[in-house]
Image (cartoon, helix red, strand yellow):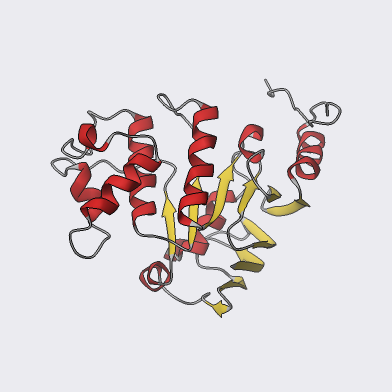
Length: 245
């Protein structure tokens, strides 16, 4: 589905790369966790895959569905089936939840809007006419943004730190939602996270540290390396790492 090959990103005005020679693959219908500590370059990789101009690769290739999309713009990538849910969801004064989700769709698609809200655990009748503004909690806005990306029926769904700063979504519930999204949409999911718990739902993953790949493979293999890099104790089979103080 997605191949990132030797991706290197050097922002304008910088001499050092924030992403340095990163390569990984996301297979069809799978959840791939891109893990690592804050500031490791995970979000920069996500934005580069989406085609945001400030994160255009200095070197490397991005292959999507066997097509080289490295030089395509964000609109062209979206048309090919790539969507991104931001770490900090947007607020839009005066726009209803219904209109916000429907904005990326063609036609009326009322059923699609309702179905996408149900997939993220929101009751449509309670949210369709609410405004996408500060009256919504952070957790509600995260769910609604994910619902908007689901409604576009993506082939690849990129979720940038969807579990950070949640208030109404408990983590176990969020992971159930993620599994439901994968089962319903059949989309591949690139999950950007620094939480060990999130990786447990992934089929496979890549560990990034200081812009470079440090480990790839199963959740257990990645977490063993993650714990070692972070100076944490690796505990037996589950590779459960205590939170670093």
